[in-house]
Image (cartoon, rainbow, N blue to C red; front, side):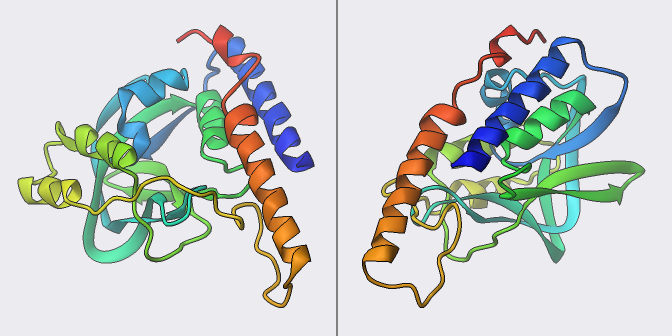
Length: 222
């Protein structure tokens, strides 16, 4: 629980730095998941200086990043020869990019990592899962952010959009008990059940309090 409190405190520090402006440094971030949604970006109080369509070659979109709910996953881009990931390239200040890292659970929690690539004269980064897990499905809401975001992408074919729109979805249900850490396989009985319960309680507090509410973000102006 302590590391999630530390995560929140460090996030607040990033927000406070952003209150004093964007700074001079700019980075290029490739969005291909929920961050394609204008409403999500607005909720996070992050507005790109510029945006343009971008297609990441030799990578494939996979819903292999575990969500907090059993059977559901978020998007990640994985190396895949001949495939492509369509998204939008956002020009962000380094301070907003640091805040985005926290929204994507990169620092402390290490759910995603930044992956940098160079393509078409651009040095860009995207978020790649640290816990690739097979047989996960996006929620209907999450998939909707992607489908709607791709509607204006000039390089996303009708076949690609149709294939994305037909992706089988899952519904959020019970929390994953191993979201925070994986228990040893040989741990059985009441200790395992007790730790599973503890993880679910901590996850509930994290999602509904520590992740959702900020003391400083409301003061950030675009």
